[in-house]
Image (cartoon, helix red, strand yellow):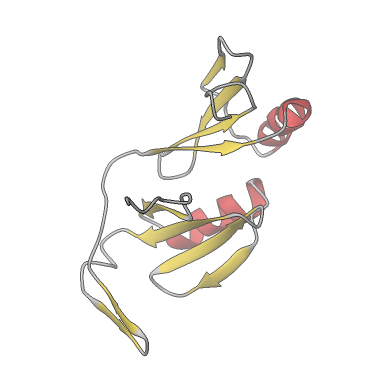
Length: 138
């Protein structure tokens, strides 16, 4: 019998200025910091997921921990992630982003009834806030 995957727990982005990125995700998106050191920060996304920000180039060596090792990894270029939001909160998010000086780059109304707004973080990653009705599963 084939074992199954239960979900995506962590999503990682690689950033040039960790302090600047932490400030954006903490202050603009109001994500609580779970853990942080000189090479990364971990954020709680609604008690269900973890967003990891790694300082670009800081994870090219194997990390040795008391409980094991983390193999090297890194990433380059602007990446994309989407955060789920409730339909009745999308307008409040647009207002929040405007207050923070974050430009909305795009809007999409999806055939299933969902809506998306797109904007950039300080490292030029494309972020999306998406309401239910985009995918068959959401």
